[in-house]
Length: 177
Ligand code: 5GP
Image 1 (spheres, helix red, strand yellow):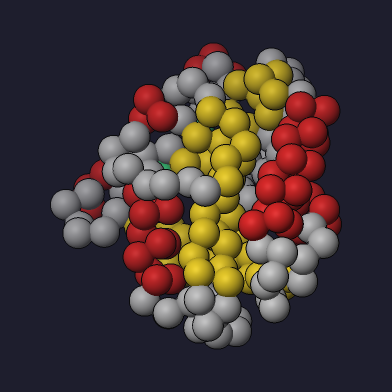
Image 2: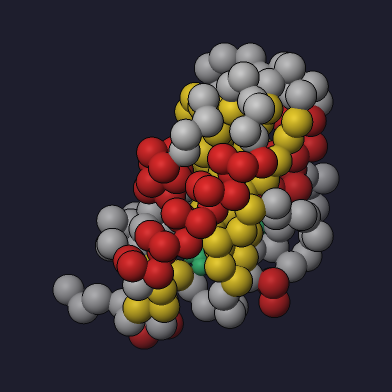
């Protein structure tokens, strides 16, 4: 199988994840417990690398969301939760961890949803951001890389479940889809 051409090498990603972990460690130096909430499936590799570099006390939760299709796009919320956290987050420092912010709808929805659970603080972290695609502005407190409007795979990200475990982030040209 042909491999997608690299956009970000494994080394670039690893160096940036080191930096993000250091920033998060500093920001949450006084936390009693930082709850990292990863959005499945795309964030599973990023979150596992990030969490293993943290020194502050933390625990890991995963959630899953699903996007409504084009036919349902008139729905008020283009995103819905299909798997929730196992343990309550009220009163905790919470950091939402996304693979990529594209239109911004998913992260904006999750911020609204989890704010309603009354965490002590609610932060956002994403490995990638495609600013050219923004439909809904949403602040990302800890961002890995800004990338152009291309379809990326690897390091947790897929195309129809393929390429998810590539060690780097590659750009999947239309001809390879
Ligand atoms: P948003 O709600 O910001 O438009 O979309 C976020 C979700 O879309 C991401 O969590 C991811 O699942 C998917 N997504 C957006 N762009 C890409 C991409 O380039 N590659 C992959 N694999 N998923 C993407």
